[in-house]
Length: 145
View 1 (tube, rainbow, N blue to C red):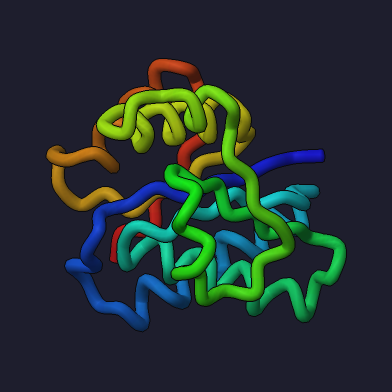
View 2: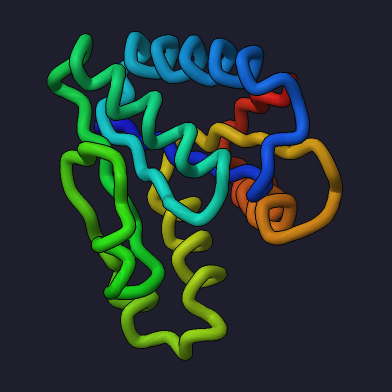
C-alpha cells in the first residue's frame, strides 16, 4: 500500500484549468505506480480540488481509497466529496484546538509516501508543511501552473 497526500495554498493563484489537468495527470501517474490511498483535506481550494479529482478518478480506478483526514470532529457535515472513508488521528483528537491543523499535517506527512503540492509562494501553512516534508525526505511533486 502506498499513500499520497496533498498540500497547497488556500487559494489557487494560477490558471485553474491548467492546475486541474496537471493534478489529474499526477494522480493517474501515482495510481499507475501503485498508490492506492489518497489522504485529502478540506480547508482550501487546493484541498477541495484534490478531493474532487481523486473522487472522480475512483470511478476509473475503483480499488483506490480517498480518505479525508479531519482536524475537527464537526468537519464531516461540510464534506462534499464522495470519499471512501475518514479518519482523525489520535494525536490530533487530543491536541489543543490551536494546534490541530499542524498536528494533522505532520501526521499526514509522516504517514505518506508521496506529497503533491501546490506552492506558489514561500509563505503560510502549506509552505511550512512542505518544508517539514522535505526535512523528512518525502517525495514531493509540484503542480504549480
